[in-house]
Length: 106
Image 1 (cartoon, rainbow, N blue to C red):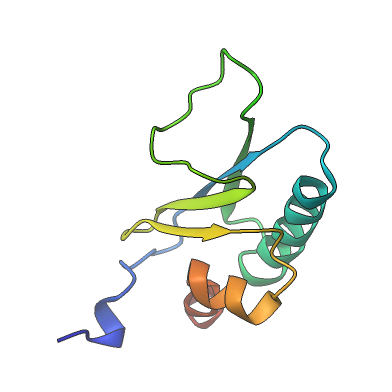
Image 2 (image 1 turned 45 degrees about the vertical axis):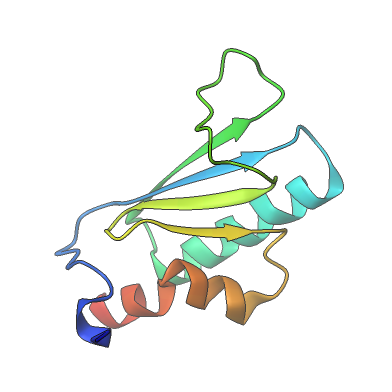
């Protein structure tokens, strides 16, 4: 059974960790980064760390399970969550990343 109160680990003021995997300056990557920064600023204020990784950079660490770009991976708080696309579907992005929970915790 999935209990909504245990879907997201307690944050207790800790910093959310997010990684955006993008393809250079492609239009969808630019949109994804812009939308993600706006969402984080609104829901997380200054409680997040965003790492942006260009998958064309051969020296960048790329997990083998990143199959599309842009992809956002939330690694903290647990559980890990992923959202693929330019994040223009704001409500789906908020839900997918669990950001509404962060607003309640603030």
